[in-house]
Figure 1: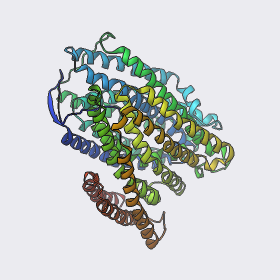
Figure 2: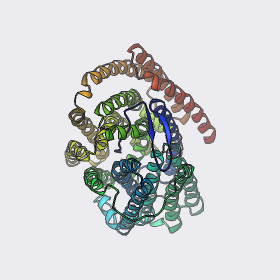
Figure 3: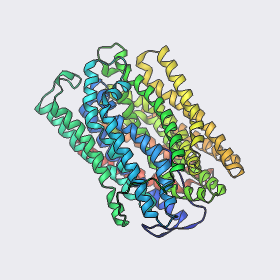
Figure 4: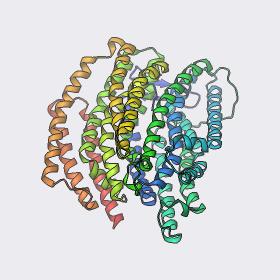
Length: 582
């Protein structure tokens, strides 16, 4: 999740061998953010149906769910490496810089060929070493049967790495050409395919094959494995293939071209080294997290491992908490991407600082409300979004989600700050300022795992991550101040922060009061959860918007209307979901 760039002038002309288009900066950012946010919203809604189907198929706790979660998330982990570090921090700047040369098409073809070969090679290596990787991620107390199932699943899931990479590469080229829509909407196709595939898996497993228990691994057969894994992989493949559509509309014609000369390889090598170090640091932390979480159910020693929170419940909680982050932080940051890149190319620290401060304020307005809503209403949110969850799964995901909400604010701000450093080709500083997060997180989670019972490990992982992110935000903020100098204004952000705190307090009080009036009841019925969530959330939203106006928060206009529209659309969506349930 580290990207870069965009320009200092109100109007910029992007000269490209592919396309020439005049863009109005402020209007274009809002338009692009809206397109991406809408696509992400639909993607997340369809993704929630995917989660419902997956939980209905495997559950969110238990050894089968944890085995598939490990196998299927290894490619997702590689997506973080590919999209968040190497590709976004290296490929995109080079795409933009290539447009400054007469032979821009040739340079771009060489870049895409190089990265395509790297991703294909990486996919092959990961597939061949799947058994080793599974044993690396699996809990130390896993049985041989559980490990063997995860290895077989991993063989079929590992090709997702190539398709994730292809999707990211083509998406970055499309975004460089000011075509954002498909990149945000393509995951919807993936989710639709997954829902269909998992539904077929459910029908076969429980109605044709009639398995006694999904956690009885001896009863797993080849059709079950193929249905589960090919569904997941086919969805990612279709998602990647759809990215050819915007490139065709942009009249982009790729030509396979080998060659390293004239593509800025020295700069790529420097950035790629530090990008790799950043990713390595983060993946070490992630590996420890996953290993401890996956080991918790077995290490607890209980007969019913489904009652213990493990890595599968952790993943389901992530899919919910990440929604506001994806809708807002990633969408806004992606839309500002080209602006920061061009400002960096023109060495305009003043423009970068203005873009960063504006983005921090804008994103924080939404993230603070998201944090309050999720922290107070996590159980109802889980009931509404994952109605197929058993009580154990509901309880596990809800508890995790509460603590995940505390990560939203720091991780969103850190995302923007990382992009500034990458815009200035300072990947080394991103690595340096990421070290505090890794050190704090590893110390805390290791200490907790040694001194507490396994039943609490996974929750304590999230608490450790939240504390580490907040501490790391302090280091990143100081680093940005050094990078941008006087252009980065502390007083401006301090005054904004005080206003947001004042806005938040009445919102929290209204939420608690409404919950008290309605009663603190959970896991009763889906419809009860729906109306309680929207009454409580509605009163909180009204209070929040009102306080934003009272405190004259200038960023309110950017989000108030979209928040209200989203709230209305969500009501319509939930009514449709209710009819589907009936």
